[in-house]
Length: 81
Image 1 (cartoon, helix red, strand yellow):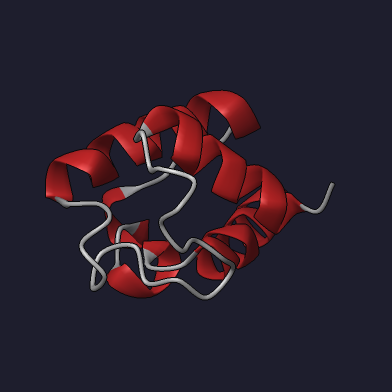
Image 2: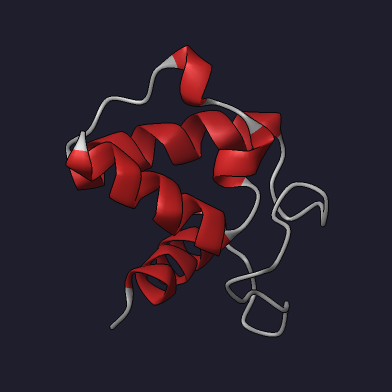
């Protein structure tokens, strides 16, 4: 399973996004109102625990978390550094 698909699955499980809601690699999670600012805090916590990384406040920008693809790219960069 690709990393993006794992992220989509994680979002569906953690945030009770229904199967009929469109959620693919380019779905805007925040602009599309699937997640809100409180959800972002939980998402960061889940990602830090699952991927054993530390997400700093300067990393918390819309571009890093708005789509599953963006999250995947961000995690790949964090894993390298």
